[in-house]
Image 1 (cartoon, rainbow, N blue to C red):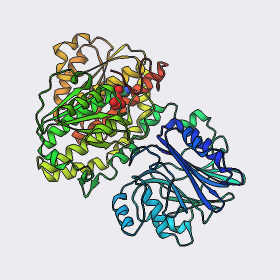
Image 2: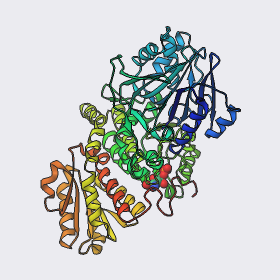
Image 3: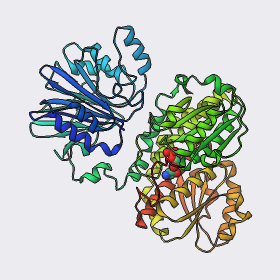
Length: 605
Ligand code: M6R
């Protein structure tokens, strides 16, 4: 996620902005930039790489009473000097920074180019700078309001103009923004840590709010200009708590960021109840491919298992899902026209990258699903779909997984539409359900305290089992990985029907079994397996859709999930497993964000 910092006051904007951006560095970024007002002009410095690189480029710190700064986490356009923010209008009189995605940037860009505007970057953001220029008629505030009425998507934008050097204009929709209140100086930032050393008095800006900020005043209104009264929030967090947004750990913060991450991944991908990947120009290839290999590691591999079932069911194409470290050393029977899909949060995982290169050596096209623009996987694949989850800092993957699932569903639905392999009405119904899945995730997050209580109760166990059939089995694997990874409790996932072929011997009095029950057609079969483990003394915790609750009455504990299309259920059912693992780790005193022996990005074989 990008970092934003703005300053208006009588001091020097430059150190305030640099210090604010430094406080946001923990969120991850790939370039940095600053725009300040100086002697009637705006001076912009921006650089790919670390904030320190940009500061070097800046040289001796100039004096300025107004400025904005940005650290960029690339979404549209590779990390580079020219894609770094701030972006400017054609005449260098307006500078703008942005966090989020302007979904309709492509048609707007075309229109603005036809009107004579010169673009210098590949970003979606730059259209905003040119729109503000287009509507500027002596009032920056009015120009920004008009520009906002042309765009849709998610944004926190912050704008200054050389012609109105006393003010900063900002607006927010679905990306964070706060105002810090100082004494004769005021601040704007994407997050509280950026301003915490300067003030503890803040306004949290809500969606669809518009800010006009000077050194002595802050006026907040809606996008139409109707004034909004806000309460000042007195922040009593320390810096560490502020970085985690008030959550105790990054993992918990990232679990709670999932609804927003899902919305961002879906953003711009659904038009008129149909999936839109027209920007990728892979429709012909996807229409004709007759075999897909999905290759990934760890959590990303588990997302691939769900992807396989979704693609096979909807698009009727045979899919193999492989662990990358295995795939690279087996004999693969490639055929021309096959497709490889690699999934990787970091885009740098050595085994996944090796599998990608192997496919390319064999003339196979590769589609990458990754969270990191400019990563090796993104650079080397033929096509890339970005997950837009924002930086994931905890080693345990949570929001990366749910957004990878979203991409796999989008892909399966898109292919089904292209190949006419599934009932058209059912496809559009499912597309609409996907569009609202974030609200179901929000509902499950409300169950946190109940799940925490379960973790407290079972914190002392040595072994756990996760069971499920079909998609529930894929999610069981992810649940077991999460638990062992951060709490160090032995956790095994089994396809429920496989139990009596061996693992049942391990079930004994008091062994917790987490059973996933979301697949309506398989519920009776799973229940028979649950009876088998209960008869041997297991304690069964059911993670169960509420419409199937009747069937799982005899389970010892129940975590109820809202009704959801069985195919989409993994996005919802994984949430309690993430929360359970998190609290198990907490109660057992483990280092949740940095589990022993593990690294966030595995760049060695
Ligand atoms: O960056 P990648 O998605 O390629 O990483 C793959 C795995 O290393 C990763 O998912 C790992 O399993 C997570 N720590 C699990 O939480």
